[in-house]
Length: 357
Image (spheres, rainbow, N blue to C red):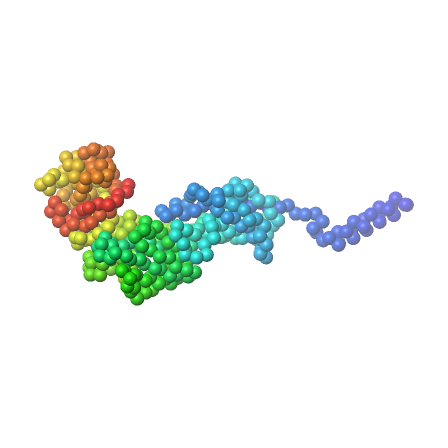
């Protein structure tokens, strides 16, 4: 009898404890969150790029509490044990608070639901969330003026561009920017432009009345899944011009339509041969080291479909000519130079400054 009373009392006590604590007296199983992070490169490829392990990793619980403030390298590949619920994952390379050189801002965010006893896998892709701007001063402009600069004012601050920054990208918040050109102490009225995230803008500063002013603006973009490359004369608010960067290089068919005298123009094509001093086209030939023949296809064997490129003495000739480098034949190449209306009887490119495979 006494044993039954004690047993009943124990049951009542257990029931009371259950009632006080609810169902949490027996915790449910945690869930697991597995996160992999990638960055889209300038050519649209998702990759675990160099430096990604140092990206900041934040895991935020529904309600705003930050559970993890770590780095991608420390959490990648390690399942995170979490109570069931909704979580927000944020990843970025470094804080971006004001315009700055060489600071693209990559950011990604995603929400995940963790279910008890299950594994939730998330692929988070970081994309560039600011805009890149580069200013290029034409050769004619830099020869005409002793001192010159371009001040670009955007949200949070300004950057000053001059002859020492032509190879550098400045980064700005998306939105309106104001461009002010100063040459030999005189400043022009500011020009307003709108810029967008993941766009890379090349602004060309040409001498007033120079050859670029004669190029009809055409709104043509070289687009990939990550960044849109825009090349434009700095004060042209209606359109863009092609060829000021490798990413917007002209094809050979397009390059043949350009007028002569355009500086710093990129073209791309396959090396299909060369020309004799008299202008005879040698398809697949290596008779001359002073020039190249480019075409849009490796199979184009007719001179009218080719495009001559001058190779003056120097490192570019040493690297590209087909006499010393027969392996260059049928390879695709990008070359920057000055357009010429008639070279071996064809539109062509002279005075090359850069090349790239």
